[in-house]
Image 1 (cartoon, rainbow, N blue to C red):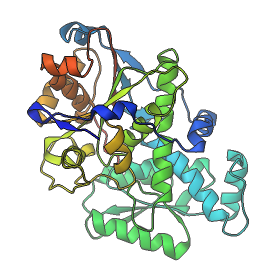
Image 2: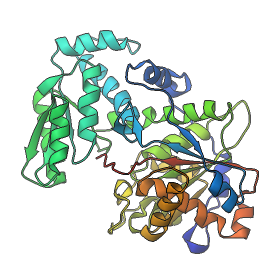
Image 3: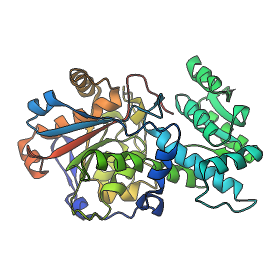
Length: 383
């Protein structure tokens, strides 16, 4: 495989265009998508926004932003899509230890079984994830203090109040976030509960995998919004790598229409774990510096995501806070309010388009269709 680091640190992998992914059966059969659209809290596809001013200034014809700043009404970010699918399968898995449960069980029947079993949902959070787990748990029959969110003592008071407002128990831990995660894990073991976390570990892989599968709905929606055809390029922000993994898995799967969608990832210069790993050709941990892109501030890529991203990412770049601040203002000029993680995807596109030679090499002509995946509104923190 030939890979190339380019000027300004932009990395490309020419062979990624021929990479073929293998989506899970739940994705390829539309089971995940059908599950999401059946939820009473599903309010339809996230908005696909045209950007006419930027189309002109960047010399493009088709530029869109898919706004993933909220899901299921007022829950921030795209993560409830993954969390809901992860919680569903986690509950089925836990209940099946007594009596096997069909994976096709309806939401209402699963909620009855979970309620009868007094199922517990456990999570650690210092942002919006705790509220999301508490809200989603009620869909599955896990109500009140059976949902227990562990929160570090120095988290904002609004984090604790949001969890309590959902009727769940907010358990304050006298320690940092790492200690909070440990306490949540110990409690889940003690009460035979379902631990909900996006981060994988040696003995904790299933729920993070299911969460990534849940993100596939974003791209299923996008296919429909673009008339049944994928974009030429999609730009995805990277934290731990789950969303990018879902994008690669979706767009690099065999397609009847034969269209190839290429993927550009972006990270903060202060936390460029994927970019560093791609450049070195091996998964690498980086020292994380300060950045306004808090939702992308990770020092390593998920191990499960790495092989897929290594083979399937077409290009990777990094951006700094100054570039992102300017991009946020440009999107505001389009009437689109995003946070730093939303600005990062536009900054990445601008970075690539600066170089005419690179633009030509990557096939970024005026007629291409490009979609920016914006994962953050003005006030979103989802861990």
